[in-house]
Image 1 (cartoon, rainbow, N blue to C red):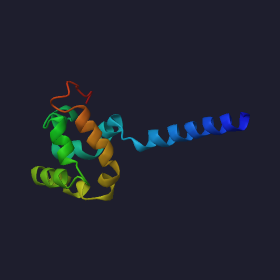
Image 2: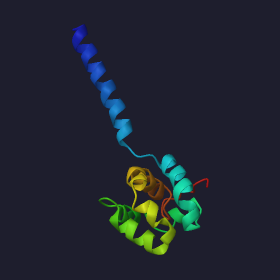
Image 3: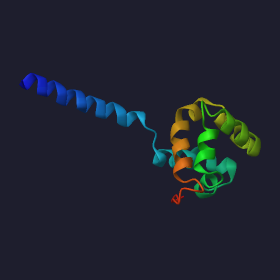
Length: 112
């Protein structure tokens, strides 16, 4: 009986650890935006995030973010190199969560 309980506790613990890594983080997204996108876009985080509603951000980032990349490469040509690079692909889930968390209809205001 002890082995079964120990196995169940271990399984729940492992699932808990794996699931936290699978979720994107709005705070990380804010840091990535400030580091990689702010200077080339000329927008602080609040102005960037409030450009769209939560539903619009979700639609822009749908799939691999092709619509977002197309729109923001056109609006801000200085961002094109980053948006079409490997770093953006890696950071996109976090930047997506940042944009959605602080969208115009969210009621939240970022501290940047």
